[in-house]
Length: 120
Image 1 (cartoon, rainbow, N blue to C red):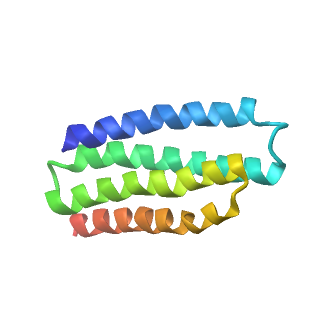
Image 2 (cartoon, helix red, strand yellow):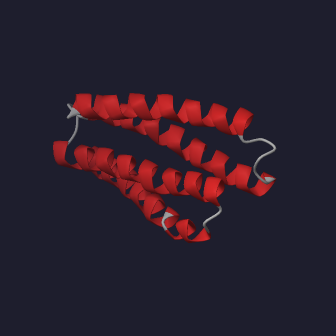
Image 3 (cartoon, rainbow, N blue to C red):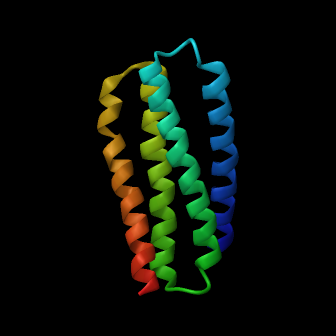
């Protein structure tokens, strides 16, 4: 499982950098400043949690496997739901997608709580 989260984290990191560059260079002037900010928020949390996935992979052998594994899947779900919904909201303007974003935020929080419990 540690290789799985290392792989997901590395791919998510590369994708996050690519999306950040796309937002900075390809979307400037095409999106309103507000929607560009929404996109950039998605990238920021995407990259934070790509790093969290890599950290999770490195912690797998040291702490409770179940909790650390749950954290990794929560971070993965958070990237997809939180960042993904913000990307789609910014690019399409479909505001109902904003209702998905908090689910991703809850997944991020759950991941951090799982890591905290694993440390205890």
